View 1: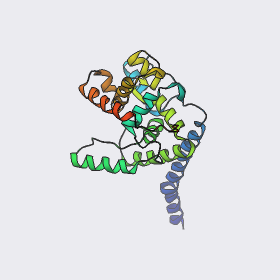
View 2: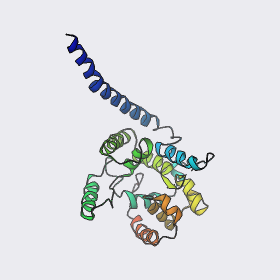
View 3: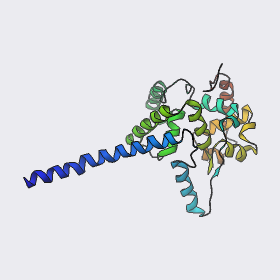
View 4: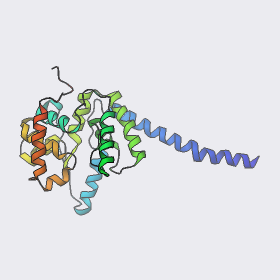
Length: 238
């Protein structure tokens, strides 16, 4: 009898307790996202990680970051990011399964990761709560948070938060800080060429912060400028 009781207690700690903790974590994510429907995040997991890295070298380091409303961000930048990062943003439910399949085939063919396939919502999910480490567990959690974001928020709100928290350089976060950092202007005044270049920097912003005259940046920016015309914004009536 005592042995059976010990086995039940062991089962509880090994199985039930981790499941309960996992469910509590999901509840935290769910309620936090609900709060952000009407309140702006002051920081993200990724911002805090990068600030910690910067402070290893400079204890007084601060991030460059300034929140601006959606309407004060140039439509040029919005269209450039959609054209570059997630052309189906206005239509999909958070995950673009077709894009993921194409990325998987391309990576398999190349023998290495050359394409991601993550949507804007997925990128926001990762930036808000998760680390940059790659694993199947982290990817599964990313999917869960992605659908939570899509459940609580409309596309415009998701895009507004993304534009204000995404990394754009070494310690540079959000469209306003990026516009000031690279061009000395506000995000509202970005022209199409400036917006295209900022969009192309997103996959590796710290690298392109150092090598701003990259030939790849120039070529890719020209391509994105041509695609911007067809990019659908979530608030488009056209």
